[in-house]
Each structure stands twice: as C-alpha cells, then as structure tokens.
Image (cartoon, rainbow, N blue to C red; front, side):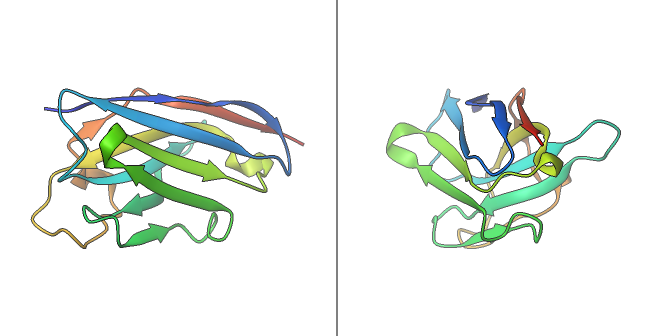
Length: 127
C-alpha cells in the first residue's frame, strides 16, 4: 500500500508559477498510474493532469493545457505538477492520486478509478 503526501502549495499572484509535489512512501511509485485532481470550494473534484505507468503518456484538462506540466521521478518516488501562468480560477486544493492498473500506457481521467489519495495542498492565486 502506498501513502501519498502533497507539498508545495501556497499563495501566488496571477501570472506566477508554483510547483507542487507528491511524495510516496510505503511503496515505490513504479507500477502506478498517477494524477493530479483539484477541488475548489463549492465545486466537484476535477481532473487536472495524469501520467501513465510508463511515464510516456500524459493528459491534461483543457483548462490547464499548455500551462501545467505533470512529471514523475520514480527513483525519488515523487510526482510533480509545475504550474505556470496561474489564474485566480486555479485556486483549489490539489490532490495527487495513484492506482495500480492493468495498462502501462493508459491515462485514467476519473477520480473513481484511483485507490490512493493524498491529503491535499492548498493553492491560492490572487488577482
């Protein structure tokens, strides 16, 4: 079983950048498909970015495409989300998630697919 802990959230001005991290313990991230989700107050949790087990495939929500970059470092058992050109509407609690799937190349876009979740890290973008 893998435990996930996010870090790196904070307050940033619109147009700025931030990198959030998700450190895994208990097991290495190898073999897990990973993703970032976010949830703003009063809204449902939504997919932000995902990466396949192999790391070769990545997917993004339209709202963050070309601004956010997901990456994984299996040697460090850490998942990252680099966020550039941040907007006030990016304000949310950001969660990392993991699952051990059958496919090494598929990206999983729905939160119900994921077995393991971190506690979240708050990202606030001021206008």
